[in-house]
Amino acid sequence: MKRLMIGIAAALALSGTAMAQDTITLGASVQETGPLANTGRYYRDGYNFAIDKINEKGGVTVNGKHYKLALKILDNQSDTNLSVRQYVQLLTQDKVNFLLGPFASDFALADSSVAEKYQVPMIEGGGASDQIFSRGYKYIFGTLPAGSEYFDSTLQMMGKLKPAPKSVALLYADDAFDVSVAKGTRALIKAYGLQAVQDQRYSSNTSDFSTLISQLKSSQPDAILVSGHETEVLNFIRQAKSLNLSAKLYSFTVGVPTADFRKALGKDANYAFGMTPWLPSTKDKDEYFGDGANFASAYAKQFGYAPDYHAASAAADVEAYVKAITAANSLDPKKVRDEIAKLNFDSLYGRIAFTAHGQINLPQTVIQVQDGKVVPIYNRTGFLAKAQYPMPAWDKR
Image 1 (cartoon, rainbow, N blue to C red):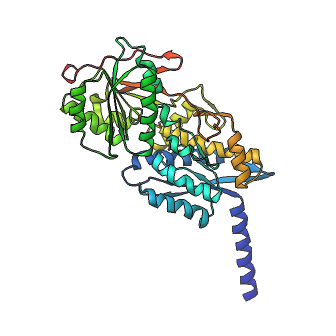
Image 2 (image 1 turned 90 degrees about the horizontal axis):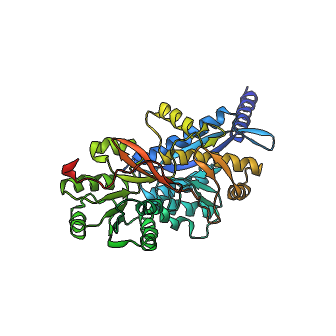
Image 3 (image 1 turned 45 degrees about the vertical axis):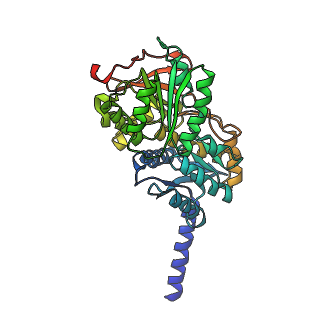
C-alpha cells in the first residue's frame, strides 16, 4: 500500500509538472487598491480580457506544443516600493515566464530595473515618461507614446484656431511622467512661437490649487496646459470654477477620455480638451478581437465600464507577447526579447512597433468634451470636428 501511495503521489507530481509546462505565465504588479486603483483596474482587466480571448483562440504554439496563457497578478497598493518587491517575487518565487507592466511612470521607471537585472522582458502600457527609455535598458518596452510629445497635437491645433492663442501657462506635477511632459512641452511652446507666461511645478497629489489659480488670474494666459493625474485635474477644474478662472482653452494630459471624468464633473466637464493615442475604431484590425471597436464593446459588456487607451494598451501588450513568443518559437527570455524588438503588427490599439529605445510611436488625437461626450477634434490629418472655442466664462455656460 505504501508503495502504491508513493506511486500515486509521483504520478500526481508528474501531472502537475506537465500542467505547469503547458502554461505560459505572465506576471504583473498593478494598483488594485490605493489612490491609483481607478486607473490600475484598466491594466488588470485589460490583461485578463486579452488572455481569455487568446486562450479561446487556441493559446500559443511553441515548437509544436500548445500552451495556454495565465496571469499572476499582485496588488501593489499604489506603493512604488512594494511594486518593486513584488516584481522580484514574481521572478524569483512565482517563476513567471515574462512581465507585464504596472500603471504610471514612477512605477514603470522603478520596476523596469528588476526586468533589466534579471534579463526578463517587461512590456508595459502604463508609463510614458521618456526617462524610462533613456537608460539604455534592453528588456523594457512601452506601448504609450512619449510623454514629451503629449501636447504636440494640441499645440498644432492651437495654431489653427481663430483667434489663435498667443500665450500659454504650463502646470505640471513633480512625478516622472509629468516632468517629462513639461520638458517636451516647454520646447514645443517655443518651437510653435507661443509666449510662456507661466511655467509652474506642483507636488503630486496636490488637492489645493487656489494659489496657482490666483497666479493664473494675474498672468491671464490664453491657454492653460496641465500635466497631472486624474484626481488633480478634477480638483483643478472644480477650483477654477469656484475661483472664476477663465481662459480661452484648457487641456489636460489625463482624465478627459474617461467616463469617470465626465461623471465626476457633470456639465463642468464640457469644453475640456485632452488627448488620446487610441479611440475605438473599426480601422484598427486585430487578430483576436476583430478590430478596436469590437474590443471596446466586448470589454464594456464584460466589465460594465468603457475602456480607454489604458485598457487597449494593456491588451496590446499581451498580444505583443504572443507574437514575439511565436516568432521566437521558444520561451527563452532573451530570444523572446529579441523578437519583441522586431515586432511590427496591427492590433486593436494600432500598429505595434518599438523604436530602438523600446518605446512606441503613436500620434495623439486631440479630444474635447462636448455636451457630455468625448469628441475627436484634431489629429495629424487636420480637424476632425469643430472645436468649441473659445471657452465661455463660467457664468456664461
